[in-house]
Length: 268
Image 1 (cartoon, rainbow, N blue to C red):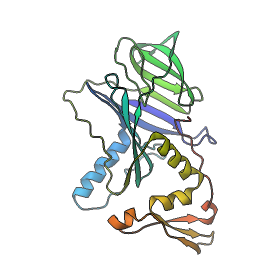
Image 2: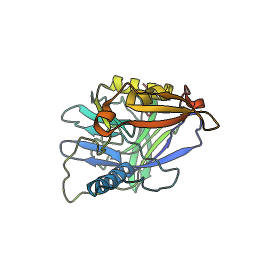
Image 3: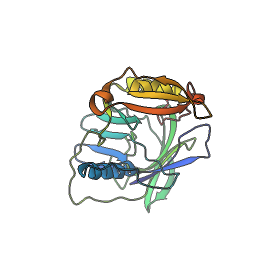
Image 4: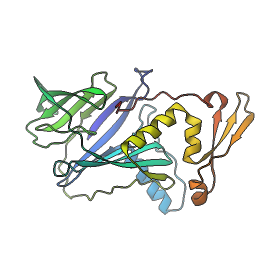
């Protein structure tokens, strides 16, 4: 189990959000995901089975679970499956070769959870990372897509401190779990694509919010500051309408072409 402190908007570096991550380490596959998102999905699953709507699990405003999941097949097969959400109604799934960070071992040591850890650094996916791994836990794994060291990574942070993972607990499971490589959402557009296609869609969403909502299947109503509707835009994407009826959302006129600041963990 890892805590994660992260900066969602690089223009507001003092606004730090929190998540709690789980890394399941198996004989054939590792699974990394948000514990908070999984809890929310469990509530949705239970309520959906009862035929009732479900609201969000109430938490502190600074707690926001990231929706992505990573299923890593290394070291036997250097490949991983990644599931990413751009909105709650669109999920992207892609396969990629596992990229090994080019680590440089350092002489520095520190204690984490009473384990002696050694420092290593690397430039990976656009960020400079400093990690602490534990040689006494000889497992080649770590949070997110970080691996490739002679010991479990217990702490990882980019040098700007925009993403800081820290191990807060280790447990030996009594029963094995079977990995389920699929999202547990009910109203979504499931898009299988390449990593490059996902990153393009992600950038498009934040660069032009309204156009991306239209592409995802929303009809968009634009309102002025007085609450008057000034524009109605129909989506060309009929995916949701064909399955669940039409979807619509409202935006303020100031958001018609506004960019949304974002700070993805992968900058390259």
